[in-house]
Image (cartoon, rainbow over all chains, first blue to last red; front, side):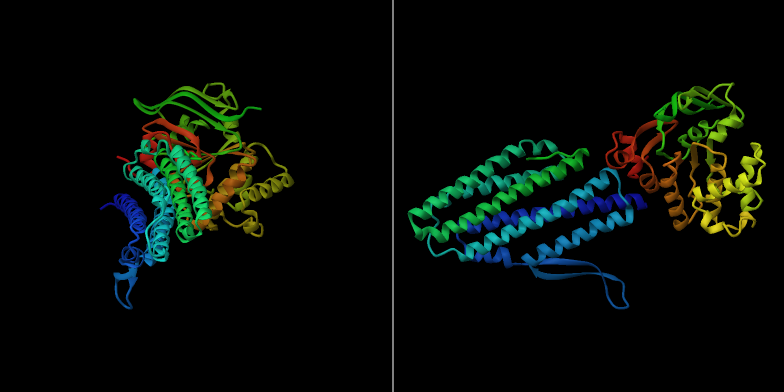
Length: 243
Length: 252
């Protein structure tokens, strides 16, 4: 394969890897929230601590050729290792090929998405940890409006990922309004939780957890907006700000 | 004072019946570095040579349209070409020092233009070699053969030679293509310094070099100027698909 074709194939493969990593972390968040909703501690434990195959690329065996080595690592460790690996791959592409124009924008966008994706995955892990700590019993007040908020935040992340896959920036329309709705929900959930806790202090362990998750989900929507800005730049070359 | 050092309007150039430039409109801002990029045969060197009428030396070369130097038409019979080439110097791909000493290379131009005073010539030599960032390296051996210098030093000597006649524009046709990375870096640093006093137009095949040294970049293809913009825009978000395909290597 000519060098230039190989370079473009590498960029495409890199883009695909970032897409898969982002998809993985969104699934982790969604599954974590499902485990939280059903207070399924086993599932939460599996999501945060389950083993994942991590491929260490280009390892050098003493006196031997470059090798790929696969290791099993807990998912929370995988999140970090894979992010580091993808960052390194992006830097390598920049160093070796000095990309410009759409190639450069794609790599820059990918490197931003990697950081956001890791954060999303870690919020998933944090929600799993909150699930272990929930007291025995059922959720209160229908989990306030957290299921709706989670659904909205995850849907923004999915739309951003789809826009990244298809380069269809129309999918990013209305992100600002969608983020506003989530911000409003965050404050409304906060106020509801305070009121519920004042009425019945026995609800504090649940409501305090809801407040944490409320914050995580709001941050996830912020990450979706940041990702949308980067994807818009990648596709059009123009920077926008989603407030 | 004119904002543009050079400008062409509807510039066509033919070698015999073959068009080499087609309706080129370009405005080159003064005290800036402008890079011309494009595949081989796209017309970038031809356009560069139009600016100091070097194409006059090519038989069967025909030019239509305007070439303006600070707003003054130079594509006519009344232009003093010798004076024009004094104002618009040129540096070529291969360093081409004369088979003379370093000193004689630099003062050759001023001598041709009638300067005989030794002190004046010494001052010009020193100033030009300093301007080309070569003085520190050669001040103790000015009377050694220019060909004894390294390739990078020879190229800077050629730049000094072009500075010695007091130009305000310097044209460079792939000035680093025969040089190693260290010599290239020195020339690139020099280009950045030169724009303080001069307007520089550089033809290069090295796009990273164009991105590094230039303020403006023009992309040419098949004799046409496809896109001209400030350099970061060309390399970050070109407007034309042809430019995008060329700089990302998806060409053809």
